[in-house]
Image 1 (cartoon, rainbow, N blue to C red):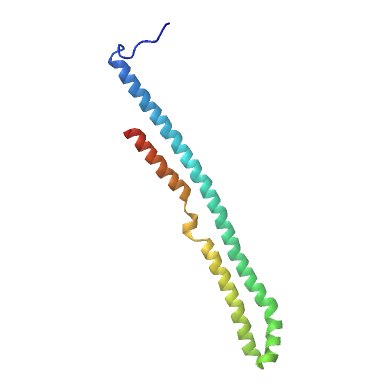
Image 2: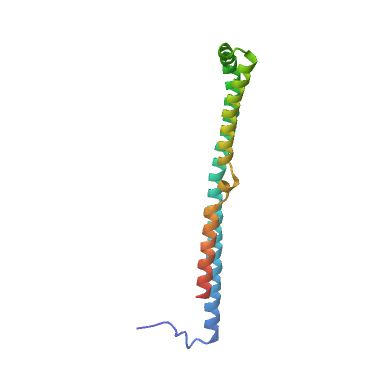
Amino acid sequence: MAQGPDPRQAGPSAGASSIQSLIGDALRETNELARKEIALFRAEMAGNVRQLIIGLACMVGSAVFAVVALLVLIGAFVKWLATIVGSEWLSALIVGGVLLAIAVGMALWARSVLSLSTLAPTRTTRQVRQDAQALSERVSG
C-alpha cells in the first residue's frame, strides 16, 4: 500500500507548515465565532427593542386612559358624589385623587417593564464568556 510521506522524515518545514495551518484554523474559527456572537447580539437587541416599544406603548396607553377617564367620568361622578358629600368641590377632589392614583400605578408598572436591566443583552454576554473560556481551554490544552 502506498502511504503519504512520513512527517518525521519531512524535516523542519513540515512542522512550520502544521503550525501555520493551526494558526490559520484558529483565526478562521475565531472569525466565525465573532460573526456568530454579533448575530446573537443583534437578535437579542431586536427582542429588547420590541420590549421597549411595548413598554412605551403602555406608557402612552396609561396617559390616554388617565386623560379619557378624567374627561368622561369626572363630570358625572363629581355630581353624583356631590349629592352624597354635600359639596361639589370636595367630590371633585376625591374623584381627581382616585384617577390620579390609577394613572400613577400604571406608570409605575410601565417603568418596571422599561428598566435598563431587562434591556441588557444577557444571553450574548453569557455566550461570549462561555466561548472565551472554551477558547482559553483549547489554547492551553
